[in-house]
Length: 226
Image (cartoon, rainbow, N blue to C red; front, top):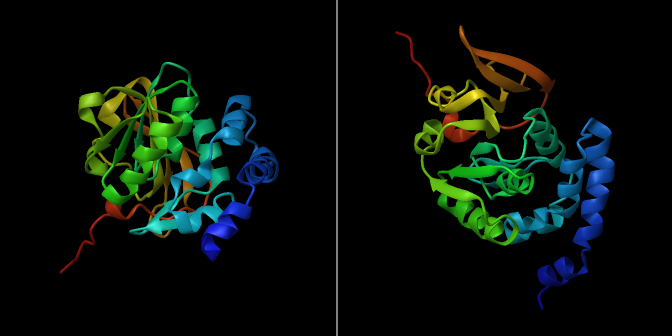
């Protein structure tokens, strides 16, 4: 057994998971007992590249390649909570990555579609969900397009920050559906927000400020003025 394997063998991931919940999740206004229970049980270390597993329960987002991150646990927990998920609802996770958020929502009893464009990440995510949340349906495709064939959705959660909500997504919401994402306007402050369709368009309600990298694929192309 090599040194890396020995170090991983020595880690008690279950104990680390409990410490994560007690030190990171409960103190930041995550009070939904369902979310707390699932985060105590869902093995986050299994949805990340092997070299990063010892850091699975650190209080930070972890780079997993291609400019993407595995979102920090406390941010995940709060975003899922403000989505107000209910059993039987349909959810779309945009930027599903390595599967942690889709699995969490599926464990909450939602019918989940996981949309991912990066095959290296979705390979990990599909294997993780097959073991931990086999009801998750994976789609390979452009993040900005959403999943019109699977719509309408009660919850659309974008796992990563965006400058603006991709225009295709509001049309894929069910009646009273909501989009949860981190909106980071250029030159402004990033905020986890809830967006809902109204008679006058899409209403966006910021909920809490947060530091989360932009999803590279959804960063608008620069506009040049002449």
